Image (cartoon, rainbow over all chains, first blue to last red; front, side, top):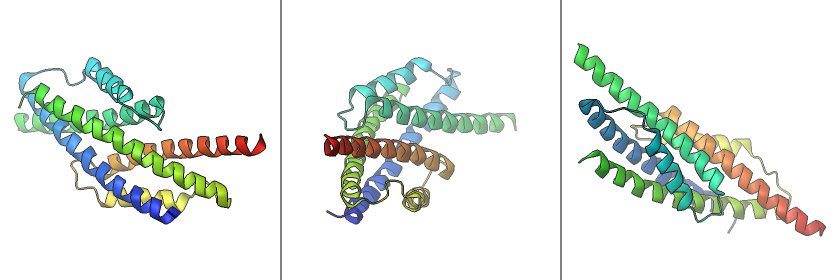
Length: 96
Length: 96
């Protein structure tokens, strides 16, 4: 396989990654809505640690566990930001 | 669906993300090997820009395009680091 062949394979993987990351953020938004309705804390460090540990534990490589942790830290950062946006817009609606 | 149900869905998505990220890094390693054999430059900023643009273009949301770009910047960082490790170990073998 040539570099171009491998890159086409990567492009296909990236398409699936974009889909999965968005699917994940839809779940995060639903959780944000439930937390918002029940008044539960948005930021739950135990759950975040659990997600990072699980990702590292199920990692078969060749990516090092530390790389998987860094990637999931970014995924969790973005999840937190999406959840915050949802709760903020829900709060604005309550106020108006 | 309860928070736990959504979290189980997220855990399943994370499993698939870990698989895809490793599958992607296997492709990157193969490209590294080809580049190493042909003496081609490891760091190709045009290709990186192309990957970031493609990811943002195919993003249907709810994640903002800026979030997708930040996530893929991290993915590319880790790819560069994996490629560097592979080329370094290939060079060590040549020297020994």
